[in-house]
Image (cartoon, rainbow, N blue to C red; front, side, top):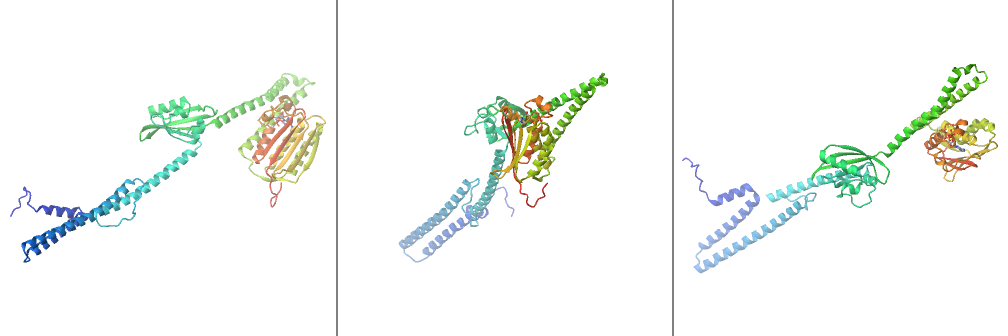
Length: 485
Ligand code: ADP
C-alpha cells in the first residue's frame, strides 16, 4: 500500500495532545497522565457498575456517585496543581523583578524535573551572574569616582546641552562654587568663565579636542584647561580637565627674574673691570700715580664676581640636593669654628664678639653648610654694625627639645617693611653699603635654604637703629652611638 502524502492523515485528536505533551515536557505530561488516569478510573467504575445486576434506579444513583467523585477528584487535582504552579510562578516573578542585582529567594531551587524547575534554576543562575556583574560595575564605578574625586586636577563633564553631568571637588574648589548640587546645572552657573563655556561648546560642535589657559575668578589662580569629546548614552558630551599651573607660572617668573637679577649683578663689576682695563690700555699703565689703584679696582670687581659665582653655586647645590650626606654635628664645634673665622673681621671693625652660653648640643645635617650659615649670620651682624657695637651668640635647648641658636647684634637694624624680603635672593636694604662691605645679597638666601633642608626654621626681629636678632631652630639629634664631626 502506497501512503497518500498529499492528504492529512486521519488520527485521533488526543494523539496530537499526547505527542505534544511528551515532546514539550514533563509538566504537561504529568497533568495529562493524571487526567487520563482519572478518566480511566471513572470509566472502570462506571463499567463495573453497569455490569452488576442492579435495578436501573440503583445504577443511575451509582453512576451519579461515580461522576460526583470524579468531579471532586478533578477539582482536587486542579486545585493542588494550580496552587503549586501559582506559588512557583510567583517566585519566578519575584526573582525576575529583582533583576538586576537581585538575589534568588532560594539559591538552590529543588529540581522537580519539569520546565518550571529548569526555568527557575536557570534564572537563579542568571541572578547570581547578574549579581556578580552588578557588584563588579559598582566597584569599578566607586573606584573611578574615588580616583576622579581625589585628583588634584579639576574634572568637569557636560552633556550636549552644556549641563554638568559630573565634576570633582578640585574643580568646585577652583571655581569657588559654594552651591549644593552642581550636577544638572549649566556650566556657567558653576564655572563663571565664558571662555571655558565657549571651548566646551566648540568641542561639542566639532568633536575636536581644545586647549585653553584661564584665570579663575576670585582665586587668582591660573589653569590650563584641556577638553575632549565624550560619548555618552544620551549623545555627544564633553569632558574638560583643569590643571592648576599657578605654581608653574610663578616658578617661571622667578626663573626669569633670577636670570635678570644675575645678569644685572654681573654687569656692574664687569663694566668696572672693562672700564678700568680700557683706561690702563689707553695709557694709564704709564700713569705711576694711578695704575696700581686701577688694578686694585679691577681685582676687587673680579673678587666680587667670584663671590657671586661661589654663592650661586652653593644655592644651586642646595636646591638640587647634591649635598645629601648628613653628619652628626656638634653645635659647639660649629659656633666656635665660625667665631674663630670672623674674629679678625670683628677686630678690624671694632665689634665686640661675645660667646654666651653654648650648650653641648647636636643636630643632623651637612656640617660645612651649617658652618657656612652661622658664618653668614655672624658676618652680617659684624658688617651691619657700628664701631664699638656688640654681637652675642648663644645656643640652648628650647622647651620643645629643639636646638635654638640666637645671634643678636647692636647694629643698624632693619626697617620692618624690609624684614619680609631680606631672605630673597639679591635683596639688600642698602645696596651701596652691602657692596661696600663685600656683600652679594645671597647670604641670607643660603642661610634659609641650609636651615630648611635640616628641617629647621629661621626667624628675624629687628629694631631700626638698635639692632637685629636672628633665631635659628633645629631638630636636636641624639649623639649616642654615632660619630661626631
Ligand atoms: P649681603 O650679602 O648683602 O649681606 P644677605 O642676604 O646676607 O646679603 O643680607 C641681605 C640684606 O639684609 C643685607 O644687604 C642687609 O641689608 C640686611 N641684613 C642682613 N643681616 C643684617 C643685620 N644683622 N643687620 C642689619 N641688616 C642686615
